[in-house]
Amino acid sequence: MLKAAPVSRLSSAFSAAVLSWCAVTGPVWAGSPPPAQPAQAAQPFYATRFERQPNPAELTELGRRLFNEPALSASGRMSCASCHSPQHAYGPANALAVQLGGPDGRLQGLRAVPSLRYRQATPPFSEHFSDNDGNDSIDQGPTGGRTWDGRANSAHEQAEMPLLSPLEMANRSPADVIARLAASPSAAAFRTTFGPQTLSQPDKAWKGLLWALEVFQQSPADFYPYNSRYDAFLRGQAQLSAAERRGMAVFNDQNKGNCLQCHPGAVKRGAFPEFTDHGLIALGVPRNKGIRANADPAWFDLGLCGPMRTDLNDHPEYCGLFKTPSLRNVAVRQAFFHNGVYHRLEDAVRFYADRDTRPARIYPSGRDGRVKKYDDLPAKFQANVNTEAPFGVDPGGRARLSEADVRDLVAFLRTLTDSDLPAARR
View 1 (tube, rainbow, N blue to C red):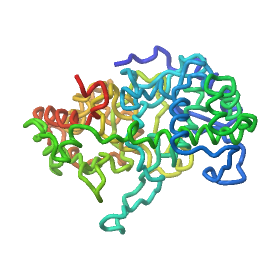
View 2 (spheres, rainbow, N blue to C red):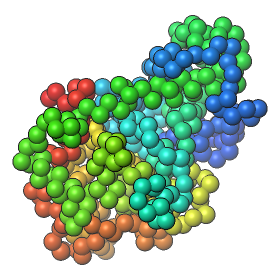
View 3 (cartoon, rainbow, N blue to C red):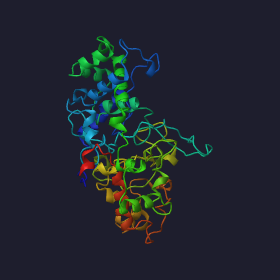
């Protein structure tokens, strides 16, 4: 696990980046902060008319190229693919809890980078979400949106964030991004797609850039192939091993793993499962001392209520809630939960068994010897932490998940790895 920084405050480089950003956009704390505000458009995003209107195939190919274009970053070395590797389910290729970026590529982010696969059906954020299947009167609470706090309602809104974050690609404005694009190896392809004069209109070119990235992320072969061994099992084309079947049973057992509560894995309305309900939940994972910002004891990432998301900071009941990620390709990851505090899938699963029954295994102890449970969430918000199964067992009690259950769950989760990824062939 990463070691904590030996200082009690953020580095001068990090502070300088944030201060320079604040001068333009206001206060920012973010691994992926709210994007700088582009000039107000006269028409909605999707109504933009370009010199040339490309077809979906052209947008997909341009988006693929732009996704891999490092010239769009201030450092000239960071592309979208730097953190979202195609060989790793469009997630990180390394085990860092948070990735490095900024103008010099050395600034540390604040949240683990998620996979971009299986996001195609993510609904826009709503505080009061009702599914359109079954009892629509049931309020499922805060649901939807992209990023760990759900503040981006579309792929093009999400694409703005890393491009403009001081801790990631570190452009100061959309106009800066377009200037870099115009001088990049991708400029000719952009002009061919949108028209030869498009780059001379920065506001319109900015929308074209985001549109291409969004359409690329709707490519089924790249982002939702549904070709894992579990998908083959659902199609009746493969069998699961005894351990995998036991793991699936634990996964679906509401008195044991109860994983299906947030990660439903059944075919629904003819659609294969995404293994997420798109909801937000407080799990109370331990504080990650390897994140430099956490060297400040007053700093807390509170997810839905801020500080990166700013429109819901007057809702204390939302503090500590983070998006439920898809479990597809979870075995490819090397950092787990929003702060990347665990680096082995087995340990991430074991957290659910030990959090309440053996908290001393999860959290640090104070000078008085007492376990500091939920140490990454201020005491006034700790009532928000979920206590449904597999949680809710008193300390010292029998965990709902045994060590055998943990092993079997991991075996089942490995069946969710897409077959086109190198990890599936190991």
